[in-house]
Image 1 (cartoon, rainbow, N blue to C red):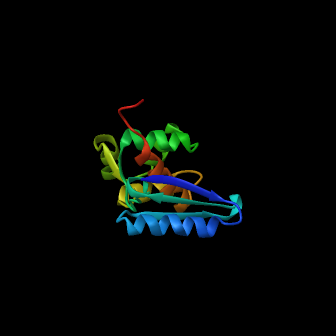
Image 2: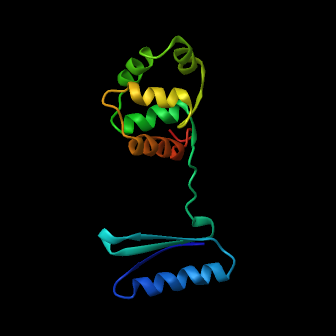
Length: 135
């Protein structure tokens, strides 16, 4: 289990050797090439990055991630006020959200300015990374 960073002229060969060694040992491996920084990161074992394409988050996590992304609670409340009464009740009484449900999609389109799909995805991934027990 490791997070390895390779740079320099032999970074490709070194990263491939690390990946191959992990796979040979029966560990998962993930290689992340970052051309702008001229580095290659290799994650192995428990450090392999897992991606949840549809993160489910608490309302607190979502609101905090929005705040971190520059979307205020007032903007969220204004967007919710523009939604149907059913979706307003969902916001009021529900404590969990996922990126792909109709409420979340509707909320994104009601926000001003409208976040791009990649920004919206990043907000949910950031929200999923927040630990509500560590405030």
